Length: 248
Image 1: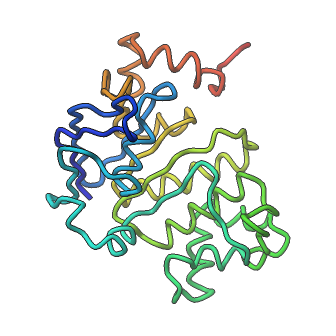
Image 2 (image 1 turned 60 degrees about the vertical axis):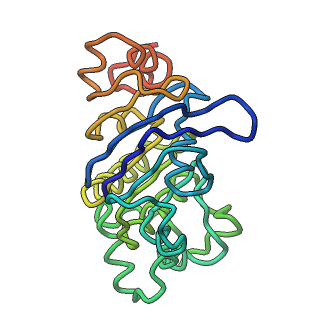
């Protein structure tokens, strides 16, 4: 699960350079949150690791090997990916959890799902694991969709977890269940999270603050707040209203 960017250059077509001589090392089992304004390069870093895009120069290595040398299908089976709008296909909750590991039994899926809040979230679904999710998960709330997608990652047991966190507001019960699922995944993977929740940035090992494709600050939430730099400004803009102490 070690990830290393070595002097990576990346641009979309002939447009403005997104990453210019970008280097970053993430230790096996480490969790990092990427924060920054729109256009800072957060999504590009994630898309390059997943090989949804190819970079123009430099190297991205996982466990010391260039990711371009891997069989793409085998490589992606080691990635647990949850996007801002989690992808679910028509079928039941159990079908969607089983997607990454088709041979899992009903009992095994139930055991994975109950790792999160002792399965309380399943009780909010009309038929539990057998609840039809509808086309693209349309019968579930955004929070429920995220829980299904995160449970799928728990069942998959990938080496690397990649999350582009949803910006939609979620009720407090689902929020706490999502955080519990995240904590379980972070314990067992190398994780890269595009963070929109205060609870997420506080739970990772290291926050990377991005501006125009460069890491301008890094550290824990408390340390970055003490510095009073760009992260502190981002906190005021995006995160402070999520704090229990917030007063409008």
